[in-house]
Length: 292
Image 1 (cartoon, rainbow, N blue to C red):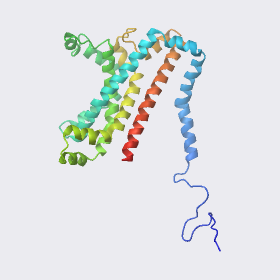
Image 2: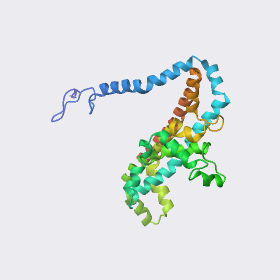
Image 3: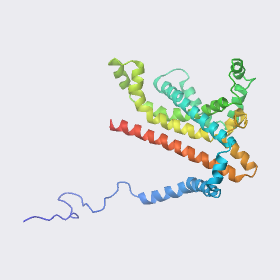
């Protein structure tokens, strides 16, 4: 005679198991509700306002604004310089984080604290200081211009400003990952005969790639929308060194709210697409490392 087991009957010496799986952390529904409400108030509703206002223009109106040569040039300068600065910071920020984590030297704590200065320094002050340094009469700019390299009032100057404000993002993201990576792995690779560059490519970089990409994404996102530290050194020359945020401000001052909203929508869509690609790549790299 077969015995029918009731799934709701607790086994001998066991704990009752119900049909519904119990969560370890209670309050998921309430927490999710607060999260969605707060995210909507801070992020989703303002962004939805951009889409709603832009929809009044229609596709023909949006395309007419997006295809203006001045708008295209401003978007190209903003996104091009932001990508260039973020790529440079991804390399140099990782190197700075490596030095701060792996080496001990006099003044290390001072240099570590100085990394956060762009966070605390007003962006307008940073822009004025960079312009004074890299201008034609600046301490650095005079020597560069003598060598035929003009920094201030060019896209190169914008890139320099974005490197300045974006470096801390990469360093502060990569630094804790390097600190958690065991140095014994590098020593073991060297013991087995691996060269320095082979150790970097096969041991160090696979561990920090997701963090480097995260820092790259943060630096890029900050650079695309940067305004204060850029307008002084950019020169704001239309079709040459005019950034998209400044063009939006100009449109607003001219009471061209439709044009300003259309440019903002273009920046929003382009930024979201690029960040989505970066985050997808970061997740895949983290998944591959976790699978190993």
